[in-house]
Image (cartoon, rainbow, N blue to C red; front, side):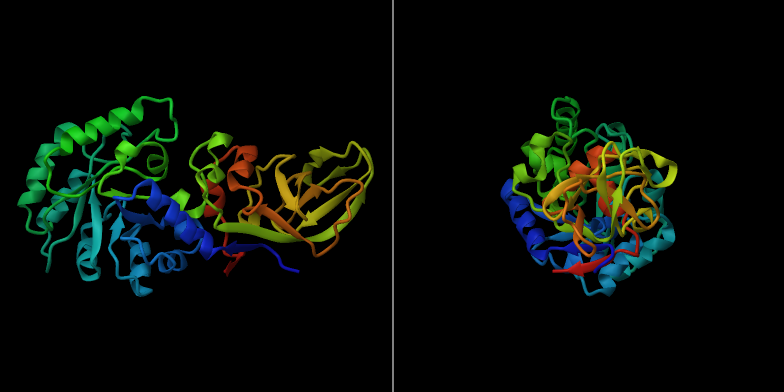
Length: 359
C-alpha cells in the first residue's frame, strides 16, 4: 500500500513534445520548467527533454539548479534578474535574462561584467503586467544596442493575457502590436506560450514557449478543448490508497463540519491524501476521484492527511486499492473545474510529502 505518489511518465512527456513540434514545426522550443517543472521535477523534466532548444525559468535559483545538474542548453530568466548583483552570476553561468524595466536597463548600463549577457527585451503589448510600453520601445532598443554588457543582436518577446479566450479580440491586437514594433529587427522573437501554440498560429515566431501543454494539460476551460483533443497525454498521475472502507448509514455525516450527509446506506472509502500533500482543502462534495476504474464522488471535507469518497452501497473496493486523484483516466482540468481553480495550480502545489516516481 502506498500513500500519496505522483507518477511521472517520461514517454508522455516525449509524446507531448512531438505534438507541440507538429503545431509549430519551424519554431525553436523554449521549454518552460519553472515552479519545479510545473510540479513534475525540475531537473528530471529538463533532462528528459534533450531535443528542446532551451529552458525557461522564473527564478535564478532554478537556473542555477539546472546548471548544477549538468544542463548546458540556454536558460532564460522569464522575469529577468532581480538585483544588479545577479548579473555576474548570469555571466558566469551563461544564463539569459529578460529585461522589462528601466531599473534592469540601468543596472546593465552600470555593471562591470567580464562578458555580455543575452537579453530578451519584453514588450507590454496589452497584458500590462511586465514589459516596456510601446512608446518606450525605441529608447530601450537604442540603449540596449549601445550597452557593451548586452550581447547582440537583441531578442524580443511579449506575453498574451487572453490567449485562452478564443472569442476575445485582445490576442489579435497583441499580435499586431508586437509585429509592428519588431518589424525589421535582426533578433529572434517569441510570442506564443501554451494557448498561443495551440490556437494562434500567427504567433508562432522564431521561438515558442510551451508550458502546461508539455505536461499534458490543456490551457483552455472548454471541455471540447481538453488535452485529449490535442492528442496530449497527462505526464503526472497522482495516486494514493484506500486505508479504510467503512459502512455509513442513511442520515449519517462524514468528516469535519459534517458537510456531507449520506442519503442512503453506503460505503465510504478513506484515501491517504489531504491538504498536507497539496490536495486542495476547498474541493467540494462531488469532486471526482477514480477508484478501480470508475469515478466516485468526494464526500466530506478534505482533511490534512485524508479525504473520503462515496464508494456506493454495492462496491467491492477494499483497503489497499489504488485511487487516482488526477492524471491518466481523470484529467486534472476536470478536477480543477469542480474545485473552482485551474489545473496549473493543482500540479504545482504538491508538497514534499508526495513521493515522486519516475517511469
